[in-house]
Image 1 (cartoon, rainbow, N blue to C red):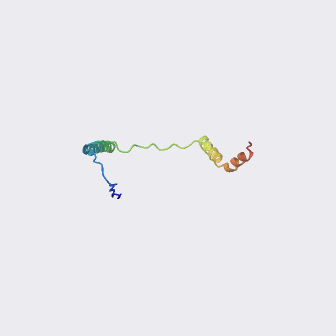
Image 2 (cartoon, rainbow, N blue to C red; image 1 turned 90 degrees about the horizontal axis):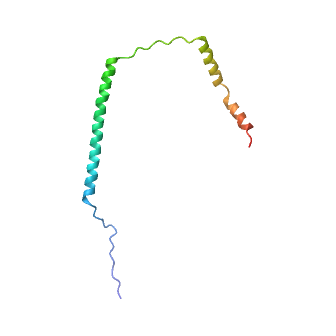
Image 3 (cartoon, helix red, strand yellow; image 1 turned 90 degrees about the vertical axis):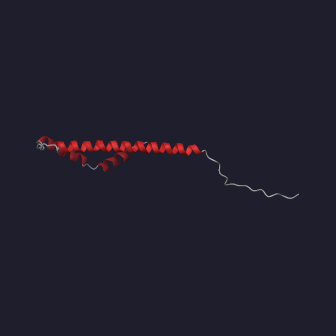
Length: 99
């Protein structure tokens, strides 16, 4: 009894449906066209805003009023509180913690 040679084709391709690729291409082109139209609309809106802002011109800035003595004292107190040695405080709290 002689053995016959068995030929296997591991690279055989399945035939894909021809319309799936066309549908995907059409959907992709639709999305690209929509994004392009939206981009164009946004560019027009941006141009309109730029022209409106150019017509208005820069806003007049009111000069800052001098700070009162109370405000200066409050600011100094805040800076002093913020410049406390927080790392030493946190280390003391962590070392005092118990189970």
